[in-house]
Length: 144
Image 1 (cartoon, rainbow, N blue to C red):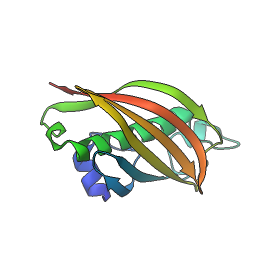
Image 2 (image 1 turned 90 degrees about the vertical axis):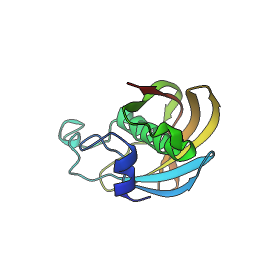
Image 3 (image 1 turned 90 degrees about the horizontal axis):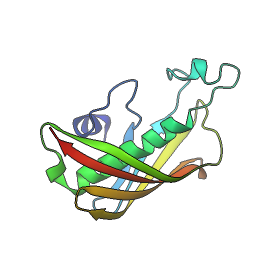
Image 4 (image 1 turned 135 degrees about the horizontal axis):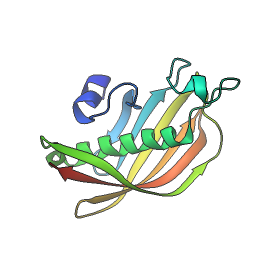
């Protein structure tokens, strides 16, 4: 899935779109995507000037965006005009190492279950095959 397909599925735009490409997607099961982290990211000048680090909350947001793409590919009915896919919960978030400029963040999202409109995922972010963060993420869709 290239950036054009991602833009058609997610409402996020620069500077808050945090998925650059989907490498693998098995609808109903798993999605693997990447975020290329560059020194030009708008958060680096303030976090931290002497040693730039991607904020952990943005790593979690990137994982949440990956779950949105997986949900949209798993359930095409979610692609309803006037609907938004919301993050509603994060459990068991863990951060193992910092994400720095030049890293390629690999985002792995797996569906654990879906009960009515609530989706539950287990997620993991890694760089060079080493886990940098993990979390259980819950999301839902709202139609306006």
